[in-house]
Length: 187
Image (cartoon, rainbow, N blue to C red):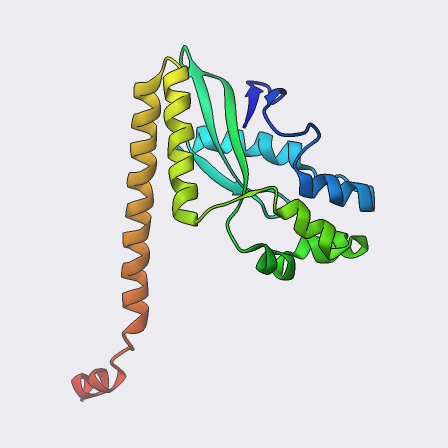
């Protein structure tokens, strides 16, 4: 878990080692190219505020993270970012991740697999629950829990409305135009 201040600066990082996740350290050591994870986490923290207090996203190395803002006095005072977690089998990850193909060509597969084994593997459903748990923690830490819960409810309502509208559009698209019936009516 990482704690960011309102400006996006990292205040605290609770991990086995400093300097990012094991996978990004291996990629950086092999290629010398920074994966840009710090900016991605700052962006994730801002999006968490925008989308009602919870946001799940992926870093450039395709590891899953989740963020929630800490609100004090009606203002975002910081954010907690949890992760990384792996939501697929490590073997599948090694085969399907574009970043590894682009940047990890110099790395031995064994090193990458060892780095991947340091991550907790979770299902997408459990990732959603971890995000909800982090959200509950930030609501507890902050003092503006009512507005965050309302904002989250509005966000979920907008998502459900968009899903219903999309399903109506798909149903309408599936019905072909009754051209034969139109010809018959014209006659």
